[in-house]
Amino acid sequence: MNTIVVGVDGSRPSLAALRFALREARLHGDQVKAVMAWHVPPTAYGGGFAPTTPEIGTFESAARAALAEALAAVADEVKDVPVESAVREGDAAHVLVEEAEGAAQLVVGC
Image (cartoon, rainbow, N blue to C red; front, side, top):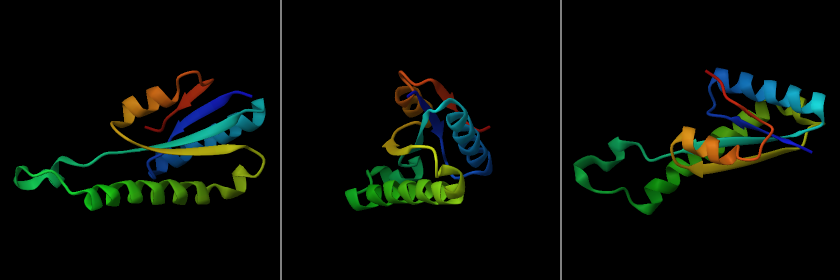
């Protein structure tokens, strides 16, 4: 079974990408790995101080919640497709390229 990696950020285009990946997986008997990347925005470093661990956890929690919400939005399309999810810290492009290593496809929105 091959894996189709799809980048999800909660936007409409990423939901469309997720739906496309699910359709492709269903057609080819593949599985989907939905990936959400997160990072601490530069504004969190106000005054030159690094954010504290609890603040960083807030960004990660928000990413996990957004990914769960996106998967819930397509729940009716997931029933017959194995779906794995991953939330990783880092630049979205780098995270997606790393997650897609060895995958059959990488799907992103616009």
